Each structure stands twice: as C-alpha cells, then as structure tokens.
Image 1 (cartoon, helix red, strand yellow):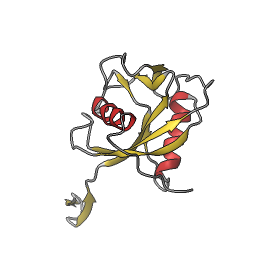
Image 2 (cartoon, helix red, strand yellow):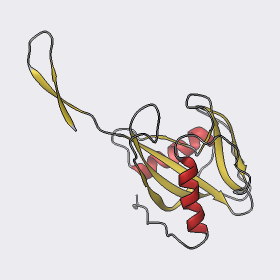
Image 3 (spheres, helix red, strand yellow):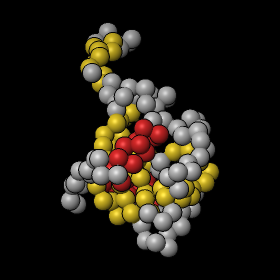
Length: 159
C-alpha cells in the first residue's frame, strides 16, 4: 500500500510503501524425532519454528537454509513449500508474511541454539511444548495434514 509522506522541511510529498515484511520458516522433520523448535530469546517469547527475515536480493530458499544454519546449526534439505501465511496480526510486532518450507536433515544431525534462540531441539509431534509463538500452531496443524495425506507440498524453486 502506498502512502504519501510530506517532508517537514520542503513540503514535498514522497511515496512510502507499507508492505508486509517477508520471512521464512522451516519445519525440520525427522520421522523418528519429530520437528525442531527453538525457544525464543526475544519477544514474542515462547517456542517457534526456526525462521527469520529474507534479506533484500536473497532468494527465499536461500534465506530458509541460511536461517536454519543461524538458528539451529543445521544444514537442511528443503523438500517443498507447505504454504504462505500472511494474516496481518500473525506477528504481534508488525505485519509479516512467511513462506513455510518442510525440510529434512541427516539422521544424526543435532540442533544447537544460535542467533536469537535460547535452545533448539527436536520435539515429538504429540508432545510439543507451549506456548507456541506467532501462528505456528496453525502451521504445524497444516503440516500434520501433509503427514496424514490430506495436503501436498508445493515444489521449491530450483537454484
């Protein structure tokens, strides 16, 4: 959405665009161990899927892999796109939209907290911690639909 901001010095109008901030989140899934969640250091507090903001000029798939290394120390293999989530109040700080991927890691991979995560660990899908931040409970429910064959992943863009 474009707004016009008036310069207090010259009186000239300048366009300002108020768009959602693009982010990416990843469901790192291991059938034997569950999914990786981080415990957030910064508000909003709670547990969350690892993820973060997409940098200008960065392909979203690259951002997803980068954020996983930064927050969990894991090198992931993206399997597909679960969906795009963009409700204006999904993040209580400001309007964001996220592209959510599903990924896998090697069976012996161990998450380690980094960046703005206090901890990172696998949690069984039937024993998730709480509270879950943002709209991540909804996203995880959608992922359960994938596991139960009621929903499919979309393909990722090739590098």
